[in-house]
Image (cartoon, rainbow, N blue to C red; front, side, top):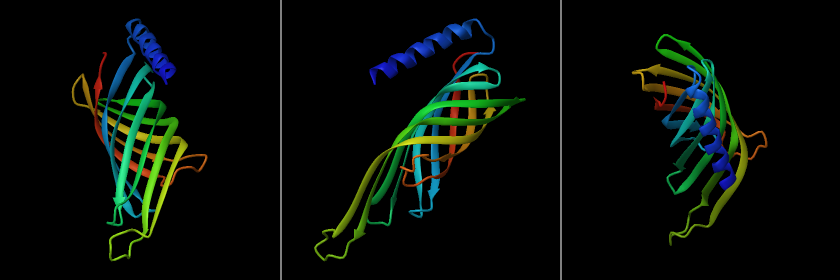
Length: 186
């Protein structure tokens, strides 16, 4: 883990040097709130997360992002949670004060689910509880829209589809994100 932190610090330092020699480099990052419907458990998952990306040119950014999302369902204490993150690449199409973005995140995540299967005891003790936790390789294609409200801040909306090519994710699906991103260099 320390190697990854040192590698990330080196990359960001290198990108900072690059941006001082280029007028197109821009570091942008911020937070998002997310919500998504999970049809397998028939409930809505809510969460928070963020991203940090660097514009290599006016039309392409690289960076990292990470999110958490969870849902309590069936009104009996059953819950589902997913935490994921990874490296992202995004193609940016700027238009006036807006930007339209198509991207992909590759990374890993951990999904947990506890389900109360039978709860019919008068004493309040559960008969069957199903617990499952898996690590997963996750790919997340997304589309995003950013609207510049000032030279330092953008409002952003994003839709993605969290999935795992290895099939180790319990509840894949679409999520909607709303957030604010801050331009840290101009």
